[in-house]
Amino acid sequence: MPELPEVETVRRILEQETVGRQITGVTFHDFQGVIGDMDPDTFRALVRGQTLGCPQRRGKYLSIPLSEGLALVIHLRMTGRLLVLPNDAAPVRFEHLALHLDSGQDLRFADQRKFGRVLCLDAYSARAALARLGPEPLERRFSASYLAQMASRRTAPVKNVLLDQRIVAGLGNIYVDEALFRARINPFTPAGTLTQDDHRRLVRAIRYVLRAALLNQGTTFSSFENPYGEQGRNADFLQVYGKGKAGQRCGRCDNELAWTKLGGRGTSFCPTCQPMPTQ
DNA sequence: TGTTATGTTGCCAT
DNA sequence: TATGGCAACATAAC
Image (cartoon, rainbow, N blue to C red):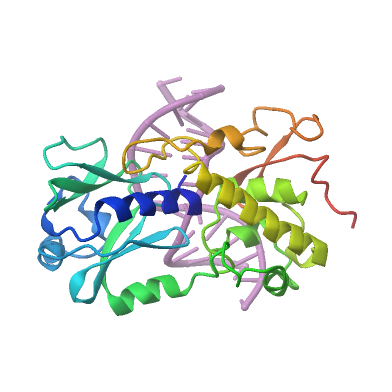
């Protein structure tokens, strides 16, 4: 599922392929709700003739500035895909939107589960949409002391706190499980009970797993592909995500990994390396 | 063949 | 405010 490393992988390819290209036309398919509440003809009128600026990423959002103070704000949610294809390529499965570019290519948006969106917003609305996000985990503002401040007095499990995009932007189920394993912290630990050393290890672990995933161009667990249709290579390096349920063994201690539900999400961890702190 | 898990975000209830 | 549950949706796997 697209989290920070996957979205950034998409952004880097779009930066190569679409910057400076003009939108010459728009094609919708069966699901026009992909652009939100906006009328499709309005969307068409707004974006036709506009030039695509340099794509930006904020958390799991992509934002592509257009001329005239507009921006395309895109979220892939769980199964959304952005693809760069020739104008004359047939629609892909679950394609909802095609932006025809003057380069002879299309920027296509496809999404099996129809949760993802491509919104055309004015600069003010675009800014508002991203303003609620917490700091970027790979920037300095996301520090051990920041995490300590946000976790202070909170009783919710640390995993839930890390998944909260208002606390830190861009983490999802995969990298939270991976980071907690690397930091040797039990996902159920009440956030407010973490020690200073926990905060430090956790921030370092989050940065490590995200950087590694970026180098591998993301994790393809089920459906993620980059705009060229290529899979990420990071799945081979996962330590716990997707392994607890199958009863696989921990790469550190060789005991069996555990699988449980936490906050409605599947959660894999090692009960030996990530023990619950004693009450 | 029916049931369940999948995971992101926003909305709702407590 | 903090927290938890669930809907939105389509499919694969059981």
